[in-house]
Length: 508
Image (cartoon, rainbow, N blue to C red; front, side, top):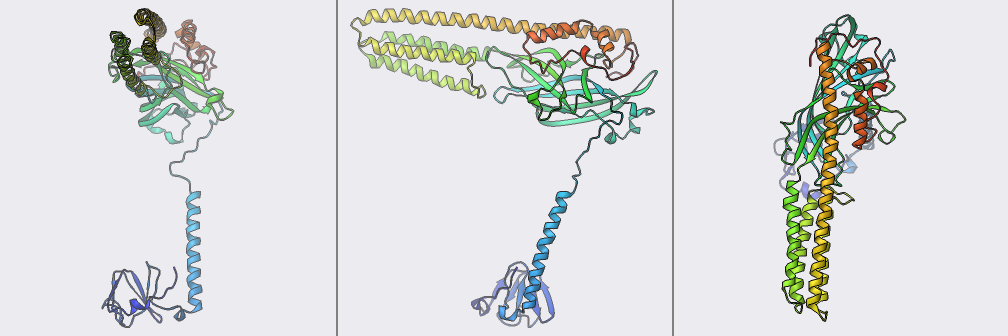
């Protein structure tokens, strides 16, 4: 802010409205007028200012009616110092803001006992939302529960006695979540008979959108593996995941909103894993837990609305032979019009798929139909210059018809193989899930226990050898090894001397 004289034509003006606020000064007397000022060029500013105050300084606009000659050097120095001090205050205030700790900043501390904790997970997909093939995303409403033994809470009997914000927790995050619309978290304490170490249960109700890279080579005869990945922010030296072998993982098929396009299978496969080198930016490895559902695309829409229409357009190309060979323009107009129609359908197929660098099965079929129409156009052009055009037409018609028949035969065989292979893989996943559910049901009937799996002995008592078969099925399905890591029976235990025959009356 600096001192500037008012122009002479404004001072000489008979009347002038100027916006406030204004700082009126006369000698050592200073007054402030916050609103507009009526300035008449005399000593009285419209009756709103004090008499005799013809010179004023605006607090908002950098101008003053005083001239530079009327301002002493000390006043200018004082004004300059004030400006510099104001700038310094702003800088200090910004530094203080940057150094201030955020109110939502959370510091996580390691366990004081340094022990490795095995966290049991149980998942239930309440509702599976829309599956977006173009964005390669899907939404889900999930209920997740995590159990772990906490010796530091010995003597606690009710959850109200615990300050959960100050307690250690496994720091479970949604590894492949794009956005989280809702997340509700609750804690419970579970006490077992004969054991003074309580079990902490962390329940989570989550509604989120997840990223899932889709394999579309067999589109529209494809099936997709939809995986929700949980990860602990603690390294594997401190936390490991395992399935709660006392209760089944479930998925509801009746609430599936994408049933018009997909068929959802009723099995939910859950496997612990460890991050790979490409999934971590540090040298640490972190525990993962993959919750996997399978869906198969309903191919009817694409077969009848795209593939069948393309077949009809390609078949109509044979109508060009009804035009005499000596009229190539009419023949080519029929063939090229049908070719342009095929190009339009190719754009329809493109809108149903993400931007991928490979051809799907439907892309290959549409391109082959367009290549056939291009061959038909070449035949129409050559027929007009042949000496025996009729014989050339007959031979060309037979060859092209054979190409069409052989191409569709190959595609039919490929579709049969793809569908049979998909059904076999999904059948194996169903069998694995049902075998595990039967083992869990038998264990529950024998022990009435709904929390089990803290030790290898507990897992072996429930699963037995069926876990090995499950891993073999996963390998046959071609699932990534980072998502189906070592069997639960190979994971080291973290809780000492717990018997699988214990009775737990807490039911989820």
